[in-house]
Length: 246
Ligand code: IPE
Ligand code: IPE
Ligand code: MG
Image 1 (tube, rainbow, N blue to C red):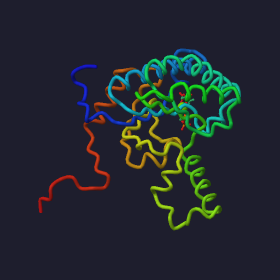
Image 2: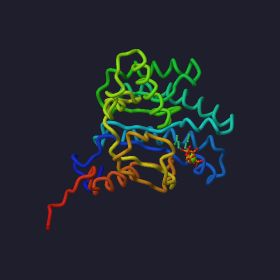
Image 3: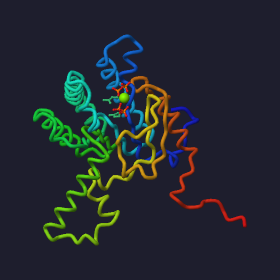
Image 4: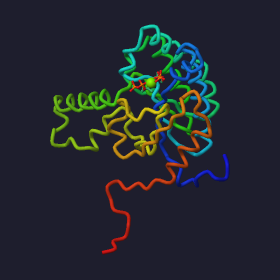
């Protein structure tokens, strides 16, 4: 890390990333899309390590959206296989690196084998107290809010919750990663300026950062550029921070 890096108090606690551009990275090299996805896994490894070194406490990576099932069957199958092999290979490294892994999303859609590996990865790293790594798979912000609503509705039906008690805090508590502070910084690579159904509720006051860098090219320098940009932001949360001058 260079001396120009922001001071500790300006480092975001929680960084979320929409990892986009694997396909374009491959196309630019005349390679098939899966080559881009594989190169994307290398970028994931780099960014986990770099975030840990910079004092980020929570890293959330959008790996597969609820809508990505709409892709050609062969690409979906390849992504599932890559998820399995990458997870299988990386668990030991995560354990050693003191990273705690959580996979977030509607996991029931995955094969039994993949679900078992996910549980194993979470179990193996559960005692780690370094970086919390949240990988979002078959996740959508709308899915998250919907499952929270369903959860609260069944409590109402069971007679243990009065609808009048449903406030923001209670709804937030029913979301898929309740208890983890909302992201401070959301990075999206590959030039697209949209949320694509990532954390809709949790990004209410998140600082957004868009870069043209394609995900497989995202390296320490690209991360540092995002962190430096974040360090210069003024977060107001609806308040006025300037002293009154009239
Ligand atoms: C992001 O890269 C990876 C996933 C969404 C799984 P893309 O595959 O979306 O890459 P582009 O957007 O086609 O370049
Ligand atoms: C968003 O990327 C989802 C992930 C990075 C997992 P997409 O490539 O699916 O988003 P759109 O379709 O361009 O909005
Ligand atoms: Mg894309």
